[in-house]
Amino acid sequence: METRIKVAENEVNLYPQDMDTSLKSLEEALSIRREINTLEKRLASLLGTALSRSAFRTGGKRMSAATRAKLSAAAKARWAKRKGTSVG
Image (tube, rainbow, N blue to C red):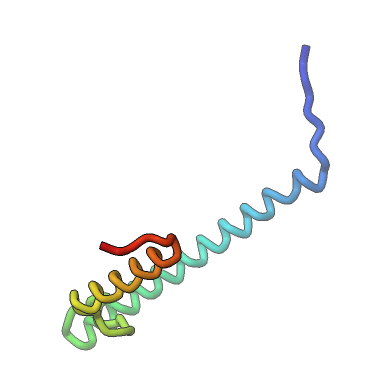
């Protein structure tokens, strides 16, 4: 005996559209990444140096080990206070 499952027509059409959108987005992202790589190579050849990813990195300072330890201790104290236990 063959069992058939009836699915609402609008549900069937939702998923392929979402997948098409995702596929198009991924293809566009890949295309952009390739363009960036090509441009980075051209720039490196013009400057005569190899560019690394870290050359383009922007952002904050690195924390020292002491600062990380202080932040960790403060976080542990907050959690202990919340739980009602002491930090040892």
